[in-house]
Amino acid sequence: MLRHAIPPARFFSQIPNEILRHPRLNSDAVRLLSWQLSLPADKHESLSATAARAGIKPTAFQRAKKQLLQEGFFHEWKEQGRGGLWRTKQLVSNVPLTGDAAAALRDGEPAHAKPVVGEPAPRPVGRHPDQEREKDTSNPPQEAGPEARQLVGTLRALDPRLRVPRGMLPELAALAAQWLRLGHTADSVRENIKRCLPTPTEPIHRPGGLLRHLLREAPPVPVPPEPPRVARMRECAGDGHTQPLLFRPVADEELCPDCRQEQAGTTTRPPAGVLAAVKGVAAARSLLRGGA
Image (cartoon, rainbow, N blue to C red):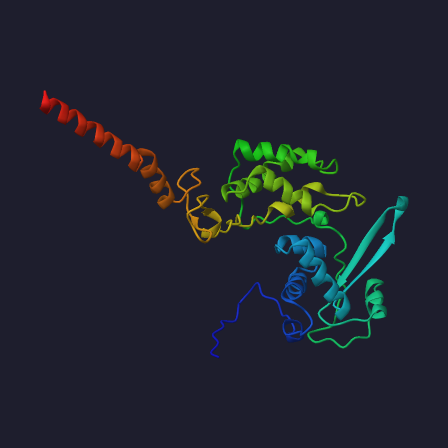
């Protein structure tokens, strides 16, 4: 096996081979963990939000999450905060951790775990990315059109917590315009945002930052697979076949071309007895005229 790899000069992550080659982690689990470990230290993103950004379906996400829990790379705790509201704290690590070691990292205590690359550090990803403060201006979005502005104006209807300051609406509209330019519909953009919102019991402290985060990366529009040829075919309703015959209809016809041709010939050609009678009458008339 030949390999050619150019070491990246920037924007790369050091992922232990123990993770990349783990025999009990499927590809979704490895991608979730690698994605989380590649995030900046001040970027807080829940595991479910990462799965949504990575295009991992809910069933596959639950399977991958279970594997990460079983292997000790992921831990989470349910805590009841002020007002009786429950919240979830999550932690990922680049080495397997026991429950006690993970709890120690959660509480800010040193954990007794031998790291593979560097010392393991707590990564509390339970907070939703609505806490983000930095603004990415490296690639400023283009100006938004009226459809994008109208789309952003309807996001409040998805959830009452999405009360966005007026000053952020042009920026969000420009981000939404990127989705529309790629071919997404307004309904699909709203559905994507609704799917990534935190649970109804969780507060959204910075709804503008959350929407900016969700709209920042517009995925390509999925191309529906072409239906198989047999799906466009129909079984001939004629009774002249020993076995079922499939044909591709041009319109709404129910007979194959051979049956239609045979039926057309039957309906336009008189029966043999009628033809004989007509010939007999003609011959009689000819004889009578000759005698006269």
